[in-house]
Image 1 (spheres, rainbow, N blue to C red):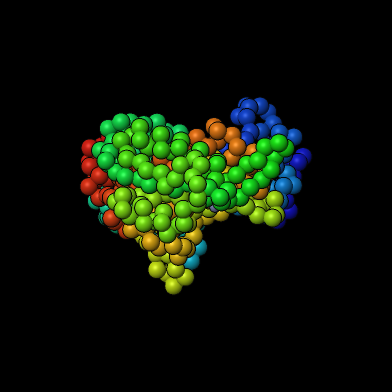
Image 2: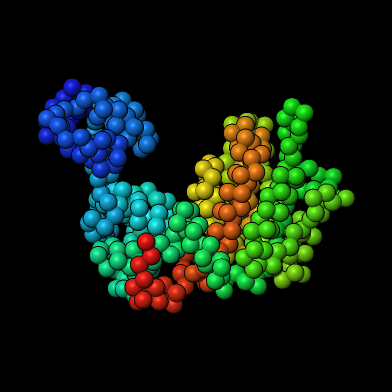
Length: 388
Ligand SMILES: [Zn+2]
């Protein structure tokens, strides 16, 4: 098909404009030229292409048309199901996948394709809220999602407000022990980057982050212990840090580090949990890592370098869910500009607090990754509480 381009007129242009207006990329101006591919339309098409990672040429060819067509679907507007061999795709599928991911269900990547994994996650959700687990997302499932969605959604401002309320009532977190481990210290500064007369070190920045996190968690009734002070004489080895957490009977262990690389372009956040190459993994550690990683990415915009399984001493010897977060590259000018800003570090703290909360609410700590506390969800659905 010949691309629809600036200057064109006709019903196809009207349709394109309608979709772009629905996406808030184009003002909904009523006028005589709704079917005209004008300058504003071209601008909107370019913005759309940019947002979808398409080549930006301001014309609507096959690829852009496909993306526009998928974008018109709003979650709840149609029933979603696993269609074979041509799976359903669209923004509604992506929204659903993101919602499920936030609730801890395993849909893989939010790729906007309703595949078998998405269908299985939907079926699991349905089972847990007492619906027929057919793996299709129709009106009943949408209702259940709407009722629960707000309560367990993460990485969004409304979750933060609600998490305040949960924290105040917070039965789940009160009395838990969290050990926070600022990496390095003493004779070992970790990654060091000179900055004029200043000198940024991983050890100092991570101790500051740990102290902020300590304050926020303690305020919600959590017992918090740091593995080191701001300026210890020597650097405690990782094995000792793990044993310390064990001896304190910690419920959660969070180690805070920064990354460094000779290439200044290396940037982003990554979270590690215990696991080996042959698929052995700490389910709770993996879950905590996923929550921490997703919350930080959502709240800070740091590049997502994902979660990884490692058999490091620190993760292997700790007997509780344990993660090591590499909160960005100190050697990246982009990451560093953010990391040295105390307000940015507060956002990281908020993300980690939200992740720890979600570890306990509403998901019980000893259920496998991706399973939701059944009683909690069912109670919310039956009560019909719409929290909007
Ligand atoms: Zn480090």
